[in-house]
Image 1 (tube, rainbow, N blue to C red):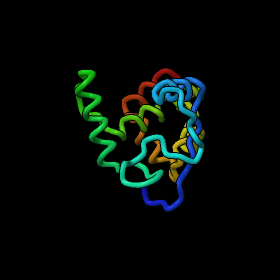
Image 2 (image 1 turned 90 degrees about the vertical axis):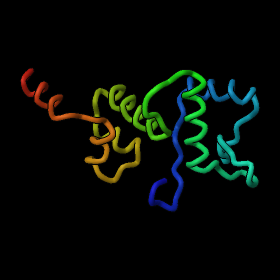
Image 3 (image 1 turned 120 degrees about the vertical axis):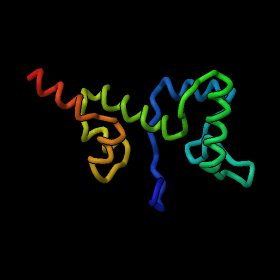
Length: 122
């Protein structure tokens, strides 16, 4: 976690677990192991730099263009939680582990034009 010493666990839904089981060829995924382990030791995570390289390679492989990185996945998760929760900004903040709601709002990319549109529809 950015700026934190403690790790945080993230709940995976049934679809995500199923896809990961398939990806890892049915091997049992231990709760205490990193999904993407480094080759530099026993149960050590890959670095953020290596994660970026993996993302870049996947984008090239599947012809995904644009500025995509590991943080894009986090923002996509944020939008998914926000929409699934009926636009509950507080629940989204907690799911992302943000200390300040303003950070969550930035993640969601809520623009002043969108706010204006909502006000106009009231």
